[in-house]
Every structure is written in structure tokens, then in C-alpha cells.
Length: 206
Image (cartoon, rainbow, N blue to C red; front, side, top):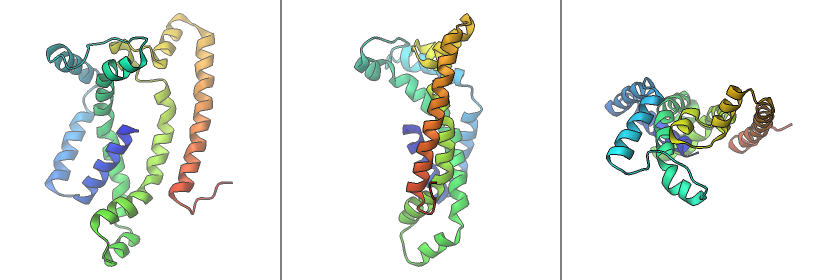
């Protein structure tokens, strides 16, 4: 959710100043970040932010929920954001740019609406349909977690457990996770249909 919101705001902002040095420079940086493996982010994050600066623990997990949220989770979350925000911002920017040149945008500007209102209300609302499709299609995969993050930070997540189950040939666990993901996929698709209806009243649920 946090990553999607940040990527959306960045995408609209970059589409607003498209063709400028800020837009081109940001796209170059994001393209470079996309070429870097998540392992590099993890190793650098643990070495610089945790080991050298001591801002976070290198790894670990406890039975205390709030300690996990405030102490152990921030660094993996930060690294997860850094890994995913670049490709998603580029993708969302393309969705926004598809809407910027539409007739309704020119009409809104001709009526004297401010540029922020045009971009963040009219354009963003119509660009949300493909964004919702993308996010919903990726949600089931998030249930399995980022396996590398879980492995390096010692987080007992679902992704880590399914990999261990495969290594141990633990078929009951594999079947349970498969059913779990299948049910979650159907639920997410239903949520996506409802969000389509909320975003665009022209969409009919039948």
C-alpha cells in the first residue's frame, strides 16, 4: 500500500513535468535501480544501515509484535520499497501519460481548472483502472513474501516456509499454501471488481 501510494504520487508528478530535466533524470535513476539485484540492496542495507551506522538490527525476529514492527521490520520494509518503487513508478507514469492527452483533460484545462486538480483528480482517477489491475494481479504473490528478505533477515514468513516445505517434500504444507493462495486470488479479484466500480461508475458489476 505504501509503495503504491508513493509510486502513484511520483508517477503523476513526473507526468506533470514530462520531458523536463527532472523527468528524464529521474527515469535514468529509476532505470539504473531496476538493473540492480535485490541481493545488492539487502547486502548494502545490512552493511551500511545496520552494521556500520547501527540504525537497525542486522537481522532477527521476536515473539513481541510491536518490537517486530518498530525494531526488526523497518529495514526490510525500506529495502522492499527501494526495490519495487522504481519499476512501479515507471509503469504508473506510462498509465498517467496515456490519459494526459485525452480530450477530457483539454476540456478541464479549458474550463480554467488548476493543473494540480487536473492531474490529481481527473487524470489520476482514470489512470487508476490499469493501476488497480496491476496491483490486484500482484497481491497473491505478496502473500508468499519476499523470500530473500525473509531469508537474510531471519523473518519467519510464508515464503520462507513454502521454500522449506519444498526442500523437505512436505506436501501437506505445499497443498495448504496452494489452496490459501488460490482463495486469496479469488478474494483479491472480487475486491478489484469492486474498486473498478468505485473508481469508474460506468463499470457494471454483474
